[in-house]
Image (cartoon, rainbow, N blue to C red; front, side):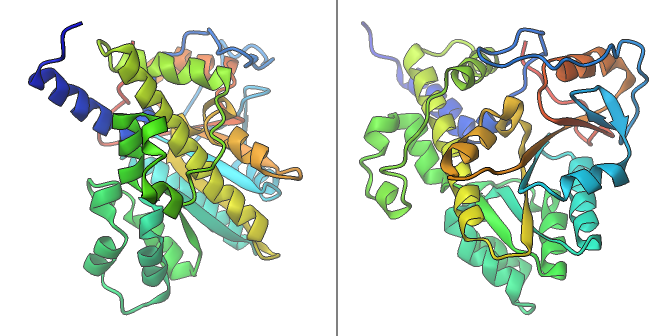
Length: 336
């Protein structure tokens, strides 16, 4: 078999590096075909329902719920997973509404956020507690460019809110360098790296669930067509590694949380919460007792996407679907 050219190798390396961030937000057109082991929601007929911006839809009934009634329900959760479309300011606004509502109910929510890595947690903590800390120094110490990059302005309101209200923030992601290593070398080789031991991931159980495999590989093949089976395997392993790392972060917090603190409000790309497969199921497996988890799929609304929303409800993509205004980038790109 011929070796790939340097141009092909470079292209694959770029795609694999990009996949470190893209894996959690890959979106495919709803098809009504559910992954293995996932059941459709027994929703009532929603074919004539009128959808609108800022509606919260309970998936099991397909009915809209009022925000106040919803908050009364959510406040008893241990973890609320918000799945966003990246760079949609309305989704940041939605998260702020939930955090503020919990504070109004005398709760102390903990924000867990995908956009920071474990190697930036110390810098994040320092910025939250030190009123004299500068924004520029914070971005450097939290390793923003290394772990996420892009415009910090997109997510700054969340950090500012936590800083002003003295809320804790958890950096959800394993360091990006580790995830990239899995994506480019494969899991077996990457786990031999000393940094894996340093960050406590060398001996972690990385659970390979058939339904999760079905969803992720389908999305990878649709969104990154033309790669080899080995490329898809490494990208898939990187996806497992990231989701298991995020689940570890939440689970460790739940086991050590002080009384009266919580719930955890997890803010990630929507790909990390779909069907509960990526992160919520992994958190549940890590807990020795029961944990009440609620998933919320944020999606921008426009009238022409009503059928897509019905498919999301039918497929039970999450416990709730929250319709928001379109972001500045318009409707999300979906792979077909």
